Image (cartoon, rainbow, N blue to C red; front, side, top):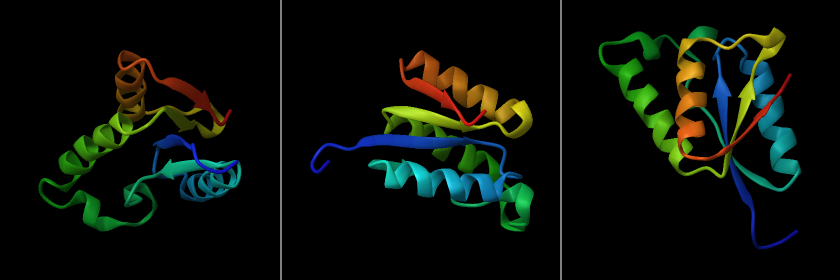
Length: 102
């Protein structure tokens, strides 16, 4: 499949770092352009919690959703936190396809 690739933005709690990495790998091998998070605040990237950074990253993630054809939600054990719920609602308002890990 060469030429047209679907763009998929990953969403979910950053405490699921390993699942993000695995989903990115699998979706890429399936022929998708995958956009992920830049930092894993709930998995040790303390820079996320500095003044103004979390708000910037949250806004940046919405811009990543703007670039996507669909979002893929990393919902380990069915967990969907407040930020992820907001991202799902945003993607829904844009008419994007939403797929879930579980």
